[in-house]
Image (cartoon, rainbow, N blue to C red; front, top):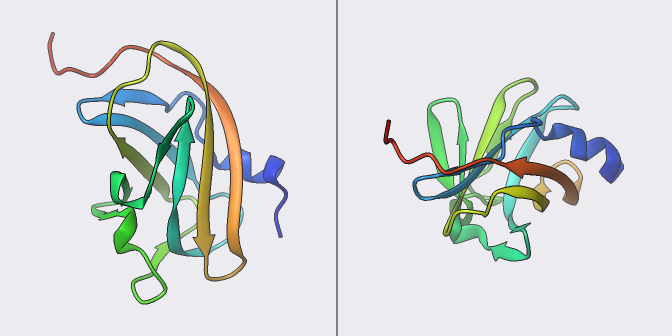
Length: 126
């Protein structure tokens, strides 16, 4: 099993940002091949996001958190970024604690956290 301090290094520093439909950040699997069979909850600044409001994108493919299961696993290959979008309200600017829980076929449920700051929202306006 990987210690939480090692798992927190999966987070791509500086990727926490507000987007049009919520909050987004990126993970980069630098540890080992993993098969996701469950996602969530993810807690950001005290707000809890359950599987239906979590979107996972790897390359050109995307899934809602509640679509990922033992019967519908998702491969998390090494060095391939994983973009996570949490549907909901944007975060205020400043530093936030993010707690991520996922379940992998290989080692079961893992949980880790990281802190990062978020800048303003992406609005598409110039």
